[in-house]
Image (tube, rainbow, N blue to C red; front, side):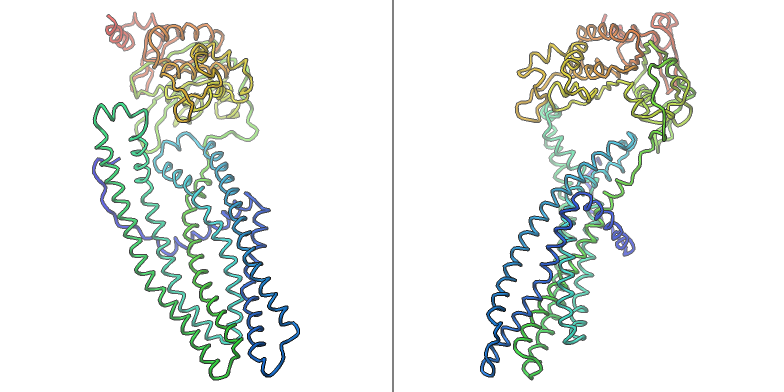
Amino acid sequence: MSATSPAIKEIPRPNWSERLKALRNIPPVMRIVWDAAPGVVISTLFFRLVAALIPLSILAVTRFIIDSVNQLKQTPLPHIFWWMVLLEFVLAGVATFMARIIEFCDTKLADRFTRHIGIRLMKHAAKLDLMSYEDPVFYDKLERARVQSTDRVQMIQVAGRLIQELITTVTLAAAIFLFSKLLLLALVVCIVPVFLGETHFAFMNYSLSFQQTPDRRELEYLRVLGGAKESAKELKLFGLAPFLVGRYSDLSDVLYHQTLGLSKRRLIFGSLLSLIGLAGYYGSYTYVIYATVIGMLTVGRMVYLSGAIAGASGNLQSLFTTFSGITNQALFMTDLLEFFAVKPKIVSKVSAPAAPKPIRTGFEFKNVSFKYPGNPRMVLKNVNFKLGPSERIAIVGENGQGKTTIVKLLTRLYEPTEGQILLDGKDLREYNLESLWKEIGVIFQDFMRYEMTAAENIAVGRIEDLDNQFLIRAAANKSLAEQTIRRLPNGFDQVLGSRFEGGVDLSGGEWQKIALARAYLRDAQLLILDEPTAALDARAESEVFQRFAELTKGKMSLLISHRFSTVRMADRVLVLANGEIAEEGRHEQLLKDGGRYAEMFELQAANYR
């Protein structure tokens, strides 16, 4: 976030080539709509086709009725006259019924589309690389995609309305064309400026929305920050509320004035341009009246043509406006489609073998270096170490030295910039990714706190065992979380957290034991704990690690910790400094060497004296 209040910026103006390119979005979006509910799409199109033909049909029947009554002095009423009156009533009834059934179909299609696109969005997001989520540009794209997955439901209804209006306009225009080609041309020419104006402001609206995405994300962050339980203590103690409210107010004012400015210009210019379309309608209407006065048209045909002109004029304007709306919606769908077009780079090769079970020789880092995209600094530089079966390794080092990065490389959430990571002598990239993850259990320091039941919170470690209460309770027992869970009002069925009514929140240490239970439930060949006891007191930490030492016998484990009282249980300690392994050995040996490890140990030990 910027430290100063944002200034009002000029809205970027997309050129016409960008606007026309947006129309390419329509076919893929329509394919998504079709995939969501093909039966509903067919029904909607059929009912709209019927509804589109009714206006001209009613005008034709009305013309017959009026001409029959007007000629009553010369000729008697035709024998089908009252049937035609009944037909007009039936057509009006069908039109009313079609409007309601189309509304029903649109609602049903919108619900199906929202569900379909929401599921597809979640599935695709789950496939993307972890690195993507650390890119602010990607986050803006993801945010717009999320909004578009629900807000663009309107495009479905607009597209259906466009088809209906097009058919109605064509039929009414045909009636005018048969009377006067110039009359129809005049109508179209007068409406074109309205269409161009609507299209221009539609694209300006998209440009403004695109520009405002980062600021709107900041607004949402400030809103959450101002009302979150996690930030409530500091907000009160530090008196941050006025600062956050002021920043929110300043930023929202800027966005408000940007949006209001565009709305004002659209109101003024849109109103002026609509007068041109209105002039085209009344000019045509006046000509038809004149033709009737001089005897060129019957009264019935005058009503017929007047209705056709009114309908065609209104539908032409509506058609252009609807089309402009679709191009606007299509432009807004750009980010959603671009999001779906993003492909993960870390994937399994075709026919990749499963990860070995059991692992025989273990993992090996060979000259592994890593840097984040856009950052020239190497987080890791030529890292070399082995993690063999049944071996426990601890990694220590100051913050920012790459400890968690090693974990993410080992689990293939990241790919090395240089070097190789081997598993049983074969490059990690050769194995099937999902099978590799099944053999690894990881608990990060920033583990998730799921606002679900205690049992579900543990079961996410191996979700296929969600209904296996025996395994879930056994994992809770191993992590020492069972005592905490049994004190809850509903035990393992208790909803945790404070988001939902009836939920019970836990302390940081209690949550951490729940997270550890996930790792034990996974029963993986490699267990990785990244600062697993940061929220535990000394006694609880001692109990957890005593249990951890017992439960990891015969398994590979990797432990990251700042507390030297916990790393001494490791078979080997790696000391990271400046992205490199500065020291390596057992706890006792490293203390004797008197190097960086011994220095850090003494500094920490001094705090307890």
